Image 1 (cartoon, rainbow, N blue to C red):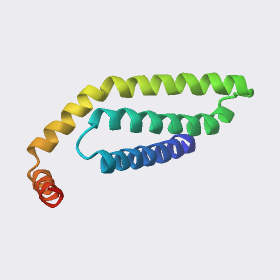
Image 2 (image 1 turned 90 degrees about the vertical axis):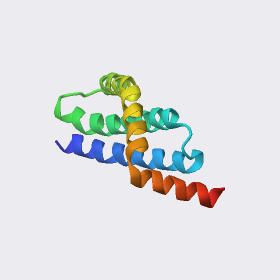
Image 3 (image 1 turned 120 degrees about the vertical axis):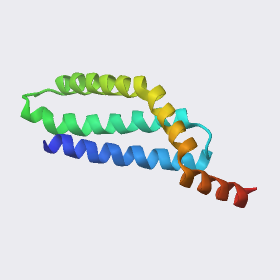
Length: 114
């Protein structure tokens, strides 16, 4: 449980940090790039931390076993995340379009930038 919690907390924190920094730099453009980059990095770090802690508990004793366990875990998690990006981006776009408070903040930013 510690492995999962540690990996999740660090991975999600990195994901949030990356997506926020990229949005600050790119503005409203590049949603798909933000999702791919932040999800990929977050899952990579999450899995490395999880596998490093959990490998001892499940009997992994060599660096080769650890590498195989970690690489397969990263590939699986990243592929699932990437497969869901079309759904995620559609939901984000819908929420942005329909959330009046988001539209007000966006209009304020555009007025101050323009």
